[in-house]
Amino acid sequence: MHEGHRRRLLQKLKNGDNLFEHELLEILLFNAYPRKNVNPVAHALLSRFAGIGEILKASPDELTTVEGVGENVAMYLNCIGQCLRRANDVRGFAVIRNASELIAFAKSRLGGRPHETLEFYFMDKSDTVRRVCTFTDNDPRRVSVRPEEIVRLISVCRPFGVYMAHNHTDCSCNPSEADDDITKKVQLICSMNNVRLYDHCIIGPDGEFSYFLSDRLDKIAEQFSASNFFKGGL
Image (cartoon, rainbow, N blue to C red):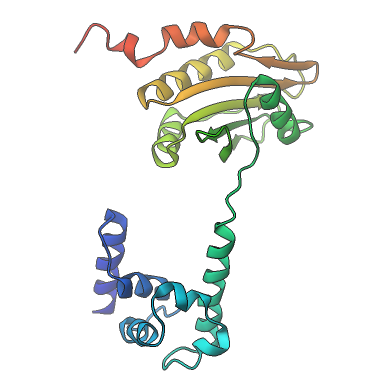
């Protein structure tokens, strides 16, 4: 019976349904009590404290005074509270406003790597990198990523804009045919999701290359956009 109740609550959470406060607290407690009905504990906590926020601010010693709450559960809830307080300190990886800042950030992450690595920097409206998605095949000369992986990442992360960067370990920073191909695919995916691809830079042993600064990105964007693909209608 408990397993069915847990599945129903988790499905409500996944669906984005409005959950009661005790239901949210129950879900938090699932990991603390793998095989126990957590409903009584959730109600006992909410009877003592004025909401989940106060529960997560409470000390472990105070939490253990609630019936059904042991030391491990108290430490678990206290840890969640500390995580939430740190989460209020909103920060990003870096601010990228132009090709120079992109290259500097990419070099700090990709320079000297022995394997070719492709990274996507997902941006918010304030030009801050909020997510970094990294791909590598642990191969010095190639890296691959499936288009459906990029589609999924963009759909769940919902960036305002995207930068791309990858490294060449032992050849010129000039783009290859494969580099052009992935840039075209990402540009089309971004266009279809109303996300702008700002630039794609390549870090090589002989320097750096920017698709934006070379005007190559503009040409790709003109050809590989959702508006061009659907211009003739369905």
